[in-house]
Image (cartoon, helix red, strand yellow):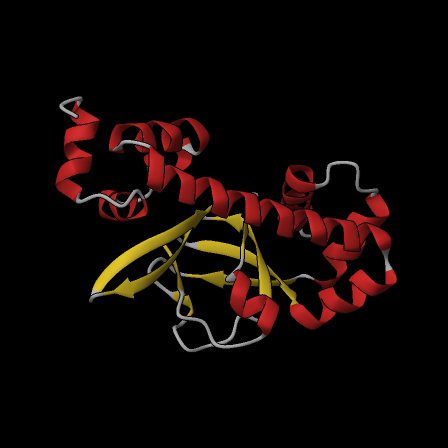
Length: 194
C-alpha cells in the first residue's frame, strides 16, 4: 500500500472537508494517479490544458506565468496542498500558467473527467469539490486584497505566518515575484529596513 497516498489524501481532505468519511477518502485514493518529477521539471506548460487537480505528496511546486518577459509566481504548493490551474481546469481550455517542481516531487493527479463523474454520483465528493473551489476563490480574493491594501512588509509577514514552508524552501526570487516586489525590496523587508 502507498502510505504517502493515504497521508496526502488525508492532509488534503482535512484541509478542505475534514468530515469526509473514510469511504469517500478511499474513493478519491482509488482514482489518483501517482507521478514523480525531478527538481526543475515542468508539469504543465503554457498552452496546454490542465486536465487534473494535483494533490502534492512530497516536494514543492510553483505555478507561474510570464508578463512583459518577467517570470511571475502565482502560487506555491507543497505537501498536503492542492494545485490547479482553475480556469483551464474548469473550462478545459489551454492555460497561460506553467507549473514546475522546485524540489523533487511526488504528486497525485485527479483527472477532470473522473472528478466530474464522481461528483455526480457521490455527494461527499461533490461537497469536497465545492469546498476546493470555494477555498480557491477565497484565496484569490485574499491575495488580490493583499496586493491592493497591504505594504510589502505586511505581505511578507502574512506569507511567513500562513506559509512558513514557502519562506524556508522557495528561492528568494520566486518569493519576491509572488509578493509583487523586487528581490532588492524583499531583501530590505527581510533585513528590517522596510
